[in-house]
Image 1 (tube, helix red, strand yellow):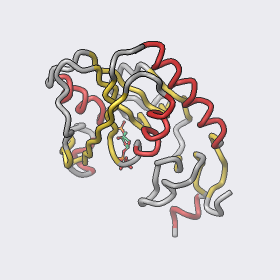
Image 2 (cartoon, rainbow, N blue to C red):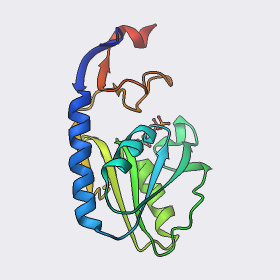
Image 3 (cartoon, rainbow, N blue to C red):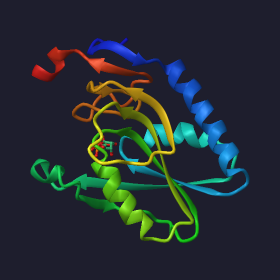
Length: 179
Ligand code: PRP
């Protein structure tokens, strides 16, 4: 285990097993219908890579990057699109892939934006959902794990851009924050 990690919340094996289950469920739901997986950078990059490989339906992937307008306006949920999708969503089955659903504000804004582009269906999958933290209701079709409201890192999730490459998800030692 990495020396900065206090506790492992989800092991590499648990994450892998759950993604296999999610991929099977998605493949059953969509069948032979093509799916456009849309990941929101950067955290979801690792999840989409593994998820895409666990789905047997035809899959395309695309990426977008967003940034909030700053901490004072984060509560408004207004985000700036830094990198937009390359693909058109018109008439397509779109599945937005997120690493973590916290307040839900990012997704609320994004879903409104994506819905206006005419997808046939628009659903969300999140690897993690923080219990009791959602400030706006988000209809999430697939949830990997409900997690307690702790600051978690690993498997795409960062603290100051570090720890994204840990193969498991864990809680940082408090000393790391105060350094
Ligand atoms: C995280 C996550 C979601 C958002 C969720 O991204 O990937 O996009 O926060 O938070 P919310 O539900 O409170 O809106 P982050 O801003 O940490 O960027 P990153 O993916 O590049 O690490």
